[in-house]
Length: 186
Image (cartoon, rainbow, N blue to C red; front, side, top):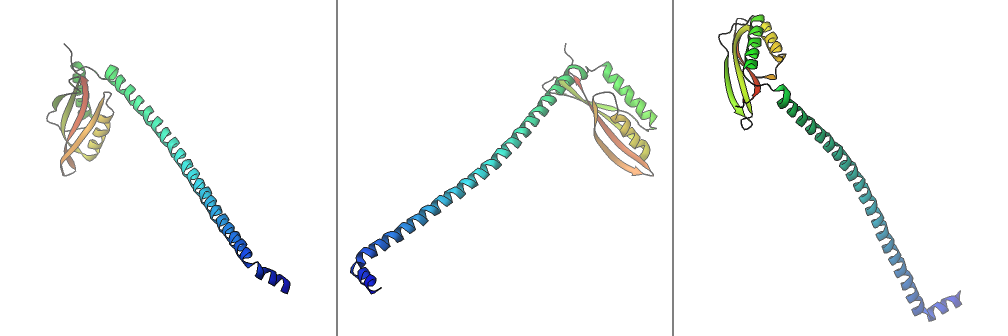
């Protein structure tokens, strides 16, 4: 063992350089390995993020297709509404008024008069007509009146119900019914 120690002592510079080279190699290996590991982990995270983005893109694509389909359906309904369901004024408005009076009488409404407001919309293509119906009735009759007005066979909707008073089980209110008609062409 003494001989080995003497040999190492005599060649200690060589062994020091050899040890230093081995330590540097080990440090380089650890550094390079950790860099490769970091690259691998980063790549795994990038792949995971990309997968999430692809899923989100597919979901947004499906949502966009659904929205596009809804828009096309709405455009088709609007074309059909303007083409066939939207009536010209005149006798049809008189028929609608007659139906409203029939519903008012059937529901035992106490009403004085029905008034109208007309306003041109969509660059003069359509008339928006608001029919103001002031009524006085019991709660159940008033409730039935609203249901019956919603069932009118015309393109109408109830725009507003303004209740002015409730006394002795009677409701005093104004029901605004809106309908649209094509502008009359000369």
